[in-house]
Length: 381
Image (tube, rainbow, N blue to C red; front, top):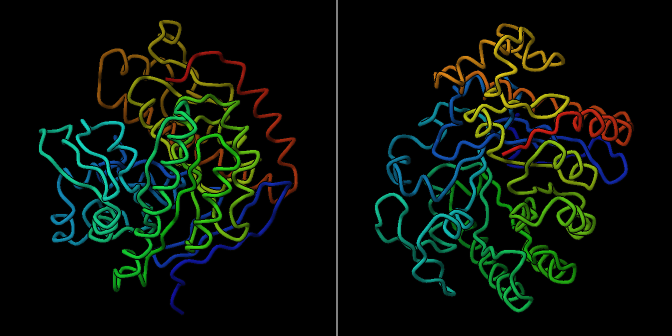
């Protein structure tokens, strides 16, 4: 029997939280799901098999970075992103809009799209809804993201409203371009992105427009960009409920473990963030009692595992003293071990959230997690 193109099933709920599965041609995605970020066709410091062993069902790739290097057309000639990087399960690709607006020297932004200079070599490129969808098709993405315009939550109400309205026009163009994608459209899915900063009315209008266009899933965009957890949670108290209950809800770019727990309580099903891999490369490990910095001298003779409650291969084999040595010496293995542990930590957290939701004990789990996670006060960078 052929697997469905895209099918979301909710198996249990607990308050606003849900747990279930997304069925796609390349495999099942258990929700709530955390997607490790493979920006440039690699989850940094990890082999694909080890990412899968950590528990990841899906990873994220990025249109902006891959269009610049090695180029979407080249990836297509080499058999697509899955073959190129050796990952045979689903891949979601970001549209590139956030990176264009945060990394690039912008030269022009208008109704057509964004013309920008590459942060690599200064060459000029244009990214429009149609070009973003084309790149994602060339990559062979399983879940394609609509192209949108992101503005800071500190922007004026007029700027926020204009950006949301333009994003909705671009969402329709993205949907039309995706539908014209032939065989790719028959095997992939496309998500729309809700915008509107922290404004409930703007977000409601955005959601209504996206629902009218029709998407396989819906992202809550424009958060985790400096507004703080309290403001983000305030928005999540209403934003997910404006989106269809029978479709996946994806909170883009989030986040810290306690951010994820709070977002699951508010009805979010999918997450991505560079934090576990970036932290792994900078000496920070996530533990059940909070993040710890392995650069600190206090770990130089600590013979305990990174996290006594963790069952990952790193914690089963190496101790804090050795990893402290690797990190301080700048050894590549240090980044590899720290990243592997962090990805296991995140995936174990998602499994715990799924289990607690299914058992109807999410509130108790979330309260216990927050209490234990706050024991270490080291800053997550």
